[in-house]
Amino acid sequence: MRVLVVEDFEILARTIGVGLRREGMAADVVGDGDDALERLSVNRYDVVVLDRDLPGTHGDDVCRRIVADHRECRVLMLTASGTVRDRVDGLGLGADDYLPKPFDFDELVARIRALARRPSVLVPPVLECGDLTLDTGRRSATRAGRRLDLSPKELAVLECLLAAGGRAVPAEELLERVWDEAADPFTTAVKTTVRRLRSKLGEPQVVHTVREGGYRVGEP
Image 1 (cartoon, one colour):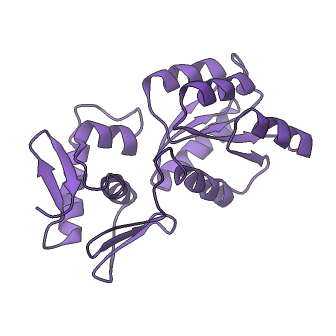
Image 2 (cartoon, rainbow, N blue to C red; image 1 turned 135 degrees about the horizontal axis):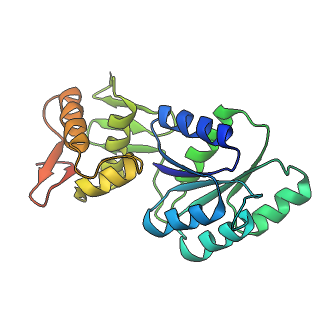
């Protein structure tokens, strides 16, 4: 899951970004509306955590642009404006959810994950392939009933592959979806993570390399 955090209070923005990365998400952080629109023009995000009162382009206008130009992206408004009228207005702009400050971080994570399960192509909360099962809400995976000890990145890669439904996923797409913009495009992170994932999944192998340089889950 890739998330864009748009928050002008630097300490809060940095804290949210660090916390989301610890939850296994790829999180980019910006401090104003203009930077948010620039990132949205070059990256594909599952969820945008958006403050309303932003410098530069106002958060309301950013929300309108997302709704118009990035229909696959979900918007969670995170703002100090927490009255019923404010929430109604925010949802009326096209936001998918609204969480007033102060907030509980666990609730923020839960809401982000709930929104990410509502993309343009519905991804079920439990993904399966043969005896391999991934519960996206609980962030846990099992194979043949055995709990797998996977890192957040390994879980995220497995989720992308299972959600693809047997489609080959290019390494570049995995890098974009699982890692944030700080990732070196020439890194071996994808290959290394897939190798560790295969080792933990055990035999017979279900993660296969395809000739075009990607990976898929399924039968050989």
